[in-house]
Length: 129
Length: 303
Image (cartoon, rainbow over all chains, first blue to last red; front, side, top):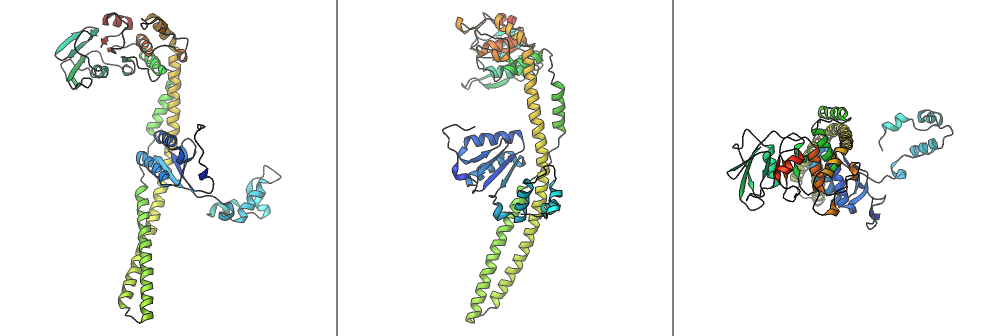
């Protein structure tokens, strides 16, 4: 919940990377919650035991403080903006669109793909972006 | 009870320190009660007395304090963190158990049994970062030396030394690149271990949350069950001085409308405590410490 007087951080919309912080203990979760409350301007999004922080030194500072305090009960990952047109092969995009547009809702993807020259699940799982 | 302070000994179920020159901090008296040993002569607790710097040793000889004692025994005007917790402690002191008891015990056992593999990924990350910067540094050096070699060849300058330096640098770079691959693989393995550790962490979190919920539900249940007794005690015990601050307990824990000291006194009256409770100086309801002990059903130290 946000107070009316606090502005949402419009500079951290989809084009910007964020730090993902996930907590794995009650204590770490509480510390994260308190940090997010205190430093709202650095918090892009909060999900209870996880948060997206701005990828600035201050965001890193907060994440590192959490690690100092709670060790491996805190996971920190860096994310990149996901542009499916730049980052994903066209065959995958076409497969997703076609599958969501299928006539028979109960058809599993493997069967759907085999009949229509879309990449099979095993192939999709084995290839990194 | 025997209470010894600054060489003087007080005896009986009710000790009144108000007429004396001694004003120890309530917390110190509570500590002394909990540390009650074989006799009042054993290891008095020495602490500064309310900032005056004068040490006032207190020792108490009394029946052992139960595990519910701490939460209930300090009767002051400060609001309890949770009235339900206070009431639940009183109920438990009577031997009552909540319906959630078995679930709580099981959750605690599960948590105990959960092992937390110690992982440390930061050392592996540091090594990768160090090898990264070594590789970058050496690549730059190789590029620089190649440039120098090229320039020397073009100007016909001697190149033997530069060739030798370049060969060394290339060898070093190759070695460091190999080390980096090893460091990355090491990090990979550490990350996999860490992931298993996090899975365990999630399980732990789930259990901890379930335990906290079960404890909260137990407190709610016990405080509900004991509330009638509590409400009766609130009404029977002496109220605060002014008539318009008479506490109204209502029918359930959420209904309590009154001052904190009345709630604390009533909780003590309901509870079964054999170790002394401490009445802080601001609690001024009883004509004497004896009357207080009588009304509360517990030994009393009045400050």
